[in-house]
Length: 315
Image (cartoon, rainbow, N blue to C red):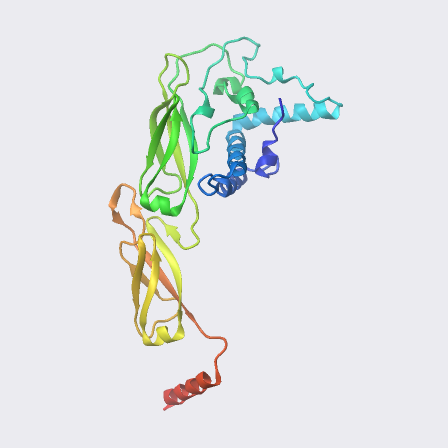
């Protein structure tokens, strides 16, 4: 079995903080997300690899175990270990004394289907797939009654998807299930899929929470349910007034610019922001900040006209 360097997959240092790992994961996940790269098998495999690495490095107990394995593997290589000769059995999921009692957490690799969140490698499955929290901590192999666990999975969506609402298809017990992500979702919004994962025979099923991550949109800045955007206008429209086209998430609208508009002045478009999560019939506002563009190069005729205007202003 091949050793996987999860730090190298995410491109972070082994001493990287949790926030650095999270930030790097989000960037890579967005770059390689299947929705952004339809039909690209290379990006699809890269996305799965990135997700697997993050599942380990985001979890303190998994990361601790992985670091211990990495130190052992590196030491073995430095001693001249030959390919295929590393003793993986010492690292496969088992009870502290080598017994055969273990708590099954379910097959996480089967949770996500077409969305690209599944297909964990053999390395992940053998090292992490069947361990409970008590086993990570070196606890007893004796099973005791416990509440069903909950699982979380980050799901990146675009701002347009957050505005309109969207869906993600997941696979549960061999069946496809479409999960609705409501309009108005923000980064950190959790969508609950009740009793989604079987953790052990004859035990209650666990819930799965999809944790939404809304990607940045170059056109808008978001603050709660309000959106902010900038628009350039020429000096003539600023002085004389006029109409300009504004892009919104629900289509283009016409904004009337009054005469004498100053650069930096903002206009509010009521109800053109994000829908409220718990009341999608209500919405925030869109604030449009105007930037007046001063021409850098003018013709002799234009210069003459501006000089005339200057003289008129002095009278």
